[in-house]
Length: 449
Image (cartoon, one colour):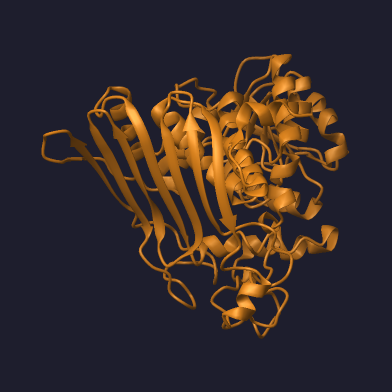
């Protein structure tokens, strides 16, 4: 139910009038701060934040602190059971969904049934049943779903797509994509709710949906069949003990055993994370800083997949979450040549406090990302394509995405529910293949009851 009232309306007008779009955020975790900050700061001219919805009141208060510091009165807060009430009372135009992946479908479906638009963090949802529900709701709704694939807005990735689309390498035959997460970023998925496959779908759904979407978008194709392998090779209790990496603590906060553990995160280094998580634990018991070598890890950390597309192209994909460096290598090979993209986001991980990292154990800002895009045409010398990453999250992708999504722009880059389905189903088919030991057809999975 509504637990606070706004004493001073943020700039803009109601749902039925002209002016800025009215946004509500559901899921008041760390990622949602991107949108709270934008709607009360850099993008306040594009839309207004009119409500927050979360099961944890302390976290909503943390977001309202951001609102207050920007000079606005706190926005109304709602619990999940009052989500549809919030849509009507606050005249919401568009919902921004930042909840745990498994629950995305609940809010997307409810918003679509009410005729509202939705921006959802990737992945669109985390399981087949949720995917079917979103697709069914979209078919009968006047609202639309946008999946926040911010990597599409990265200028390097857009340039690669332009080159493929103009035929620089002819007809695409194959793609190779290797993505490596370093010992800080990769470890972070094993400290929090993502470590539970039921909640996140595993990294082939939660993380790789970014990567699968890029390939789909780059080559203009839809995935049809997937074969995959995956293991928990590095993290988890058994691996930690076997390699002598495990420390005897359950969570980082308040543990002396975690003080010198390079795999531990120290939330109390950050006032924002303290407010969002440590001070919010009394409401739901959620702990953000679990031991990566503790029990309860049910996701993989080393995964390979082969994907076939409706154009006949193939993808070979590999994701690891325990690399000494962070970045990715892409090769798109066609009938007339090859495009190669090499990106280094972090050249190495240091033990202890990372340079420029505000929180021990968390990845530092990726301020020194380096990229090289090379075109190799048949019978010609290689050509370096000049393009550079931009400042900001995801190589400048976050800011460009916010410009488009919060401004309601149809820019040809925005990803809809079909794009979200293609990326999600690639990961879900990979999970199904790991379980069955055989290739899985996406159409067959979608049709299964």
